[in-house]
Image (cartoon, rainbow, N blue to C red; front, side):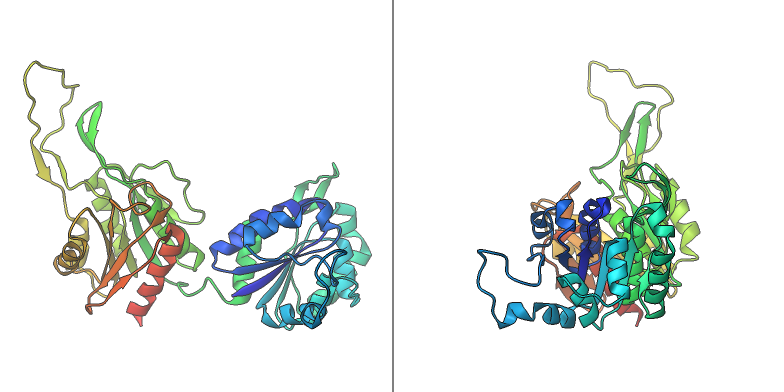
Length: 399
């Protein structure tokens, strides 16, 4: 979906750059429109670099630019017709007044009058300007016409005063945009259980067995499911990642701890996505004291750990079950075998020796294997984008 982001002239204009990135994470195509005053705070080049698109700054061609033609003369109409939403953040008192009174002296004002798409404004200004009767009357008029207003936050303002007027948080604005567009609700009412990260199996008080998993894929799945309206339970082995906002985080360390946590919470889950890299073996017994270095060889006896995915598959009921397969060879053969043995609905497999698809990367390259025999190869993409593709496939299975 395509949105226009109007940036008007206030100190908070710099925050619009962060907002662009956040909106892009929602797979939104962002076209930036800047007022002349906004360009005093942030350059158009910043937004052009972030969006890869032309930044519209004026109704008319600038001096020395290519001569105006029919297309450029009616550009505001073309943009107005192709966007799904107009967002203005920050929206100054000046731009709110112009919108309320139908003043179209620049591209943004003209775009507002020309579009039939929903309009969202996020005001930011001095607290006295926000409280002024003129501003409040303008907001009342805009709300009456169906404009969605995101009230500013309270706090310390750039002018040195304290009160309402600070631009709302990026996450708040992005959520409102998604709500207005009807995004982010396809998992509403569902509980999604995600496992993530490695597990650690103690050898002695200072040593343990583990693997190279960073947990990034599982955390991306938890974040994506939460954004799409699910109640998310994230059972995580040790990682250094920030806990996604709004999820029910359950920290664990050893495989048996993860098993107990997953099985307990699987009862309430509509979807279980086992993205954790669980240790396949553990020492038969951990030593109570540190093992000292000796002269000869040291033999460590290992035993298999519980197979959490297989246990879930044996008692799957109506739950959608997704497993992962990190492979170094015979990827397709191993993934199909795992799909059959574990009773899963889907296996997401990758060759961890590929560049951009291994451990601790921000991207992944996978093939999705389904019970109906289909194989869906996916190109290299961010783990958050992949998380959304996996969730899309879950919804298909649930139909």
